[in-house]
Image (tube, rainbow, N blue to C red; front, side):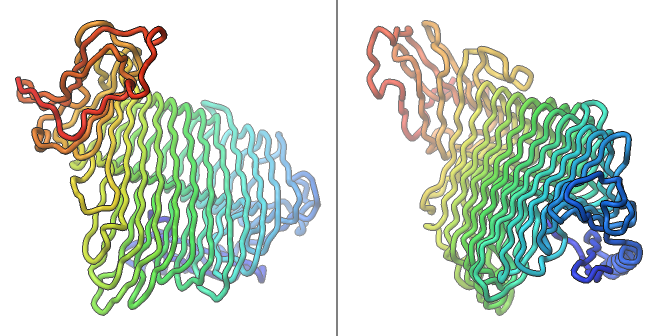
Length: 599
């Protein structure tokens, strides 16, 4: 995750306790980028006027409700942070400002903002209990924003819903919610940069020991288009600099529902925990995204769900943190989902320095749990990793515990995996000076009336060097017809995978969700042109919930130069309601090694 790769300059605004931040994208020509940033700061600070809401409840468009006796407009920074509620109703509008703050996480303060039938146009940032700059002290803020029935919502730069930066001497608590509910086929929503929901970042050191919790929830529904020009970051917790035993927690939840044309974003990050630069303490990230009933979902770059990284302790430094990342993405009823690069699901990493003279020490723990569920969705992606643990350092000590858990579930869905590496399930990697016994990588890919196609499939990593790692492929069988890209979700099919080449070192499970008719039935779970070490594979095979009247004849075949992992059963179904079933009859264990028959 790279949420803050920017050059940033700060300038004092006319209001003494507030700051204006100008952010320019990273550019190889650093000098030119900084000159541009200086220019933007000068323009912003010269023109922006701070206007405060000063009544308990009232009309946003009533100038008497603002301390300047004027309604905010472009060029103004509007603050609703006195605990009051500002409302606006048609035919007034649109609401316009340079920056809009609903709640004040920097100085503390609550606020509520409600629009009905009115468009919103913010030239820079929309902040709902969020800020671009570090808090100046202990602060708590609750922000609530609701925009109903607009035709357009345009935010020029960042949208922050529960997002705070602070140091280890501070206690920060934020609780924020944003709702945008439009008219399907009409309403267009455009966010010019990142969309931060439930992001907590400890960026400066100190001597204190604090606990800071930042929560954000956002619901975007009934839209024509939704464009997020950079990326949603949902549920992020970051520890950096020389921190002293703080606890940081970021919790975010994002719902996108009923978008008739397209949802597009540069990348997507949910449930990310990060520590670096001689940090100590704990960080917990919890992120949940649900996307439902979208015609087209386009993710330009990476999709990361549940990722923890402890890295870069610095020269002779120590990174001793316990970080936990929990991420969940559910996609339902999406006709076309496409990601251009890669998916990381349940990935935990620890990395030391490698520079000359460094003596890094990285200990503590890095734990990641990522879950992606596709239901009635057709998806295309680049490389996918499900449950990956890695440790790497060339100098110093690296004793951190790395625990990765990833789950990818396909229900009535198809998945086309591109890229040269394809799908990796349950892999662990140690390079340099690290302790293999501290690594744990568990990955599960489950297919229910679904089909996946890919170049390479790697199930497990074939190594005995790690304390606990492995991958599992679970195929649900609902009939005797093999699924394809075009038939996923049809009744009476069984799930399957096609790959160009595959390595199987984990566990393959066939789960019967139907009672077969009498006779012999073949189930080609996996076909591949090159199944590595087919005769000597160490994969284990399980058959579960098969009617006790059937037996398993074999579980593999090479036919017409195509390697096939094939389950063949034969028998006559038994009425299990009349004959008591032994406790173990529902599970047939074929054990390690692939039973082969060549034709």
